[in-house]
Image (cartoon, rainbow, N blue to C red; front, side, top):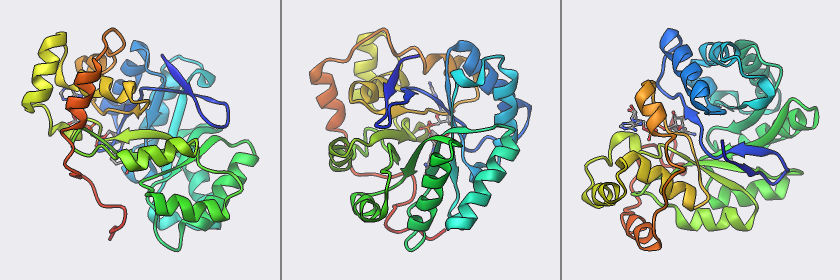
Length: 271
Ligand code: NAD
């Protein structure tokens, strides 16, 4: 699996498996084992997904050594705070039956809470319990605020990003600040498969629309974590390293932007 070097020197796979909306149980355990068998090395979960136990089980049962895998989880909004976040992290490791995480993220930038939570992530990182720390759904102004308080800056910002929400300004800011961008809902939760521009590009390459979108991310240095529990789709989403989009095609895809979110607006979160 191709990797990128994060600002703190550790390698992160450019493609991972997302497990949002997959319940605890056998389906999730087998999806994770299948993904790892096919060559995935990165799994993205979160405390709020309520599936950390099965995620951990799939990882352990994969047969691949822990140090060859890259595991991400996220601290939920109600656990933001110094002591609260330390406790939430312990609970995540307990459920996953893991000794450490590769990446731990603040899930949403809840005003008045994320600075204290960030101090907890810095401590966990310094204690060697998380190899890299980052954020999710942070806008430029959240990152600017964090910069005033942080001793370590986030190395990843995981944000909603797909052809109808291209996030160019935030991506440019992250690039200038050595923060890798990771796309959540890269397939817009299935909302782009009938798009004629994407369909035409896909037909031209003999690839699916999903593969074209994920390839567009890779060629823009964006890390992706598409979600599926179906073996054939998990395989399909990995077959993106054997073709290349032209500069014209990349521009055509960029032009699909409508600043359209399928998830919440980080500046207006009410959960
Ligand atoms: P996604 O864009 O990955 O789309 C998933 C949907 O597309 C599923 O219904 C799946 O069955 C379908 N699909 C996947 N591959 C396909 C293929 N090749 N062909 C046809 N259909 C296919 O949506 P997502 O799950 O919301 O996002 C991916 C991951 O991002 C999540 O699982 C989670 O790990 C992460 N995420 C993070 C946040 C956050 O706030 N940080 C929010 C949402 C999701």
